[in-house]
Image 1 (cartoon, rainbow, N blue to C red):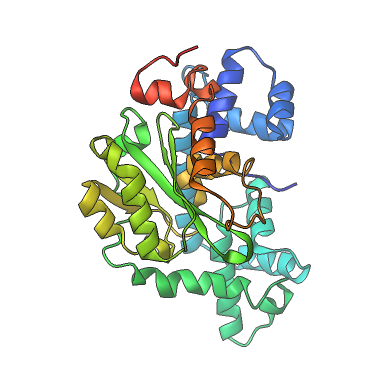
Image 2 (spheres, rainbow, N blue to C red):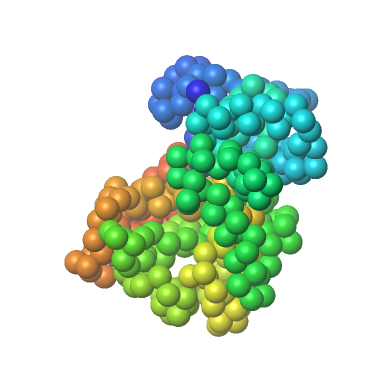
Length: 323
């Protein structure tokens, strides 16, 4: 069984369930995880002093642990670890499966990207480990792509430089941005979610070109211009015009570390909610602005357990929704 890194939203659900007196097996069943995953999460990320579980603190501790362990693993991939990785690769395990299994067995917290790099280095030395990757023409190139092309986004500022107040989630106005891609990789919908209130803004379908993402982001966020401190995105080239957007809306833009989707966990979770209305494999050709507005209204007016059963609109705007 592979270990799955929990998102911040999932951790808030765990926090709420524990406060309500749920047992671990009940939490696991409701959230769709194994009981061992819930037990491990509570054991590793609860306060050592109070024994209580805080989703926000747990997320920060988890991210810090992964960064530190990943840094250690990058520096200390000794012969023993290399032999273990080689053994699994020869058995046709994917780097992601190896990464999670090593974490599960408490051997090493090493990122799957680092394993791809190890395989690439082996190939450059004449090795054949890469031939055991299921998609060896795609997988190892993906690891190379991040190092080669991430610099193409000019003025890119890493999330590591983002103010700590954003992680603390004590103010409204820090956002995460992403895109949902349509059938055949045609069309893109921009989604932007506020980290504290879960309020989401959704664009109409456009292309994935940076200029279209720029225009739609400015259009949907201009009415909220005074409630934007930061926006965090991944390293996709669709966000190459981030400077134009941030200059227009007057905020600071930050980029996640490569292949670190958990750093935009709420956005990932919110995109999953949107998929209820726009399933994967859906063509965007017939999606109207009215349909987008309907989805946005449904999500922003839906009570959330993480918000003590208030809606994103109620928390963001500080108003009680009419009955």
